[in-house]
Length: 384
Image (cartoon, rainbow, N blue to C red; front, side, top):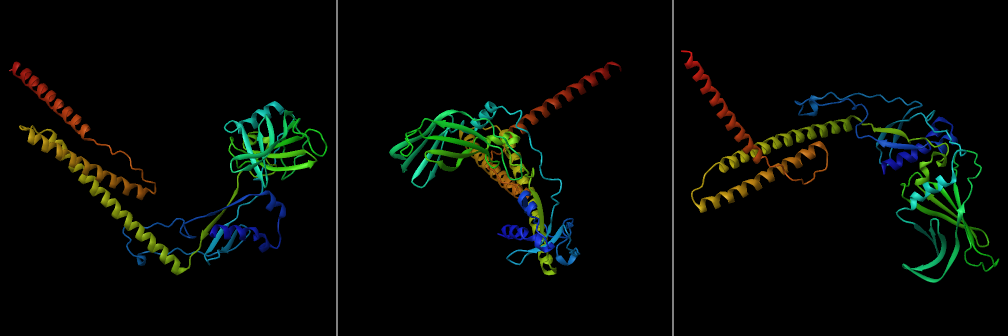
């Protein structure tokens, strides 16, 4: 809600400077970013020893409005300091000529939007219009998912039309058209119905997406369908003229009075204490898990003389393994919370086998060292 309020304020912001740049409002895209760190606290940090707000020196900030920094407020009374970017030299004015564009290439690019779904529909009240790319256009009435009554053909695919002569202007787009003819007979002209399909780039769509935007009858039984696709945007000549490559970010940070700053610092201290407690708890959990692994390893080296003892050892191993997994999962969940990431309940790595391998390697190394020692003693005795 606060973001929406700020956007509305930004739309009337030029009034503050006694002039409204209509061209800039039409051509430039803005994106409001609300930062969580208040003004003046950008480089603020707490030392590990801080436990009270009385131990902290609050940063001071003096706000001075200018052409690029303004003070604003949301509907809830929260004040923000917003940094306004410069729109100069950041908008795209380059237009790629259509001279080297081949109509067949353009048609193939548009077809990419219909690979997953070859037919698209548009409901306009009583009638529903269906376009099957490169095949036909139909007008039908639907009740639920069923066709009711006569299906009218608005034309079958004839071919691609030449690219139109296009003079690039801000807010305009080049389009690509196809012609469909030989549809159902028209009751008015007694001629076959026909249609023109006009394809336009929509940068908000994925390459595989397309939809019928408008349908209108420019004369009796002659239709024009406007279809927006994402794939056509792959050809830069079809993108909107004069749009900035990326939206310009308006950075807004909350500004706090003395009381608000005190509350903010208290929240930082509380968060730091919670993080410290969680870190200490994680260390204790990992230490307990390590102790359990050592117990399991010691039990695996024990020789059992009776089946009953072996069965009891299996139950103990199952209990210890579950306890180890629970401890490590809890430690992982707490660590994910500390890092600010989503916890995934993953398989816990059980290093008991690694411990066994390490023990075997240690025993081998000990035997080798003992063997080398005996050889050295034998060599020394031979020289005496």
